[in-house]
Length: 253
Image (cartoon, rainbow, N blue to C red; front, side):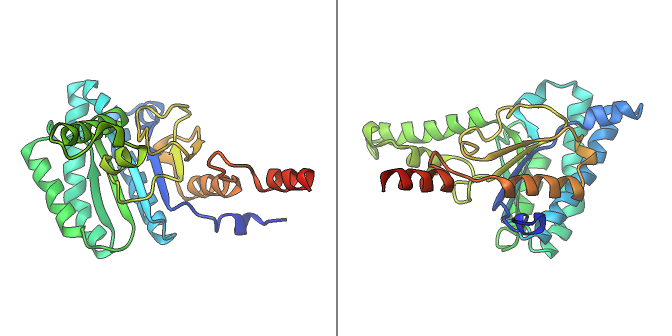
C-alpha cells in the first residue's frame, strides 16, 4: 500500500488558488472586512514560501477578479492600496529568493502608479528561475478567452490566418501564461463550490479541491491536505484508468 508520505511526493507543477473567505474571517472576529484582507495577505505570503520550498513550478493566486470592481468603493480602494504596498514590501524578498513574479489580467483600470510598480517588479524578477508566482488581478476567464479570440480575429482580418486553421492549440497560444503549464491542482477556500470565472480554459483537466477553511486560516497543514488529495487522484485526461486498461486487455485476450 502506498504511504501518505510517498503519495505527497506526487506534486503538481502548477497550483491555482482562489483565496476566498477574508471577509467572513473578519466578521467572525467582529473586525472590518479590510482586516480580513490584511490577514489574507499574510496567508498568501506563507503559502508562497511553502510552494517555493516544495519546488512547485507555478503558483497562481486569484487576487482581484473583474467582478470585484462592483464591491464598495472603500473596500476596492483598500485592496488597491494593499496591492501596491504589498508589491513595494515583498518584491526584494521575492527577488532574493529567485521567485519570478508575473501578473495576468486587464490593467487598464489600475492607477498609473500601480501599473508602473507592476512593470517594475516583473522586469526585476523576469530572469529568476525558481517558483513562478502569478497574480491574477482584474482577471476573468471569459476576458482571457475573449482577448485571445480578438488576436486570432485580427490575424484572420489581415490575412495571416484562415478561419479554418483556428484550433484549440492556436487559441491556447494566445491566452495568458501560454508558455507555462496549465494548473494541475485548483484550490478554493471558504466552502464555495464554484470556479468563478477563473482560468476557464486552463482548468479543463485540473483536479478541483474545495475546503471550508477560510483563506486567512489556510496554512501548511491545509496545503498538505490539498496536496495529499491531489496525490491520491489518477489523472486520466479522458483516458481509462490503469485498472480499466488491465481489465480491457484481459477481456480482449
